[in-house]
Amino acid sequence: MNEIEKAAARVSRKERRGLKGRMQNFLMFLPNMVVLLGRMLKDVRVPTAEKALFLAAIVYVISPLDFIPDVFPFIGQVDDVYVVALTLLRLINRTDASIVREHWSGGGDIASLADSIAAIAPKLLPRRVTRILTSRVELAPAGKVLRGITNRDEAVVIEIPQRENELDVDTASKLAH
Image (cartoon, helix red, strand yellow):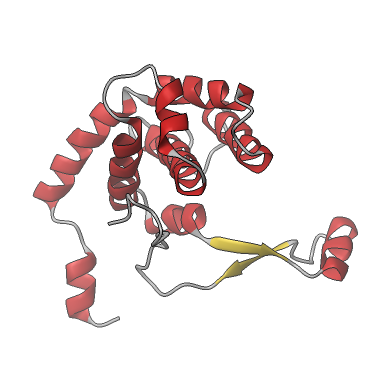
C-alpha cells in the first residue's frame, strides 16, 4: 500500500471525534440489543444457526474476556456493540428485517442502527480487532480438525485471506454501503 492510500485510509482527528460521539450514542442501545437477541432466541422463524450466533454474541457481550476488555472505557464496549450489530445484519441479510423490527423495543429503526454501527465501529477499533471480527473463515479439512482436537498445533479453522483495508460486505444486502 503506497503512502497516498495509507493517508486516505486514516480517519482525521475531527472525523474521529464525530464518529466517537455517534458511537457513544449507539452504546446506549447495547442493553436493548442484548434483550433483542434474547427475544430472537425464542422466535421459531429464526434459523437455528442464527440462534447459535445470537447466543455466542450474548456470551461475548457479557463475558469479561473480549478482544478488548470492558475495563477500558468506551473502546471496550465498541467491540461488543460491533459484534451484536454484525450478528443482526447477518440475520437481516438472511431473512427479513421485519422479524428483527418486531422484537425491537428500543427507539429508532434497528436495521439502520445496526448498519450505522457496522459502518462506524471499524474506524474506531484497532485494525487487528476489526480484521479478526470481520474475517471469513472456513473449517479445516476433516483430518486436520480431528488432529487439531488432540494436537493443538493443527488449525481447526482457516482464515480466508482478504486484501488490506477491505471489509467484506454482503452485496445482496439492502443495507450495504
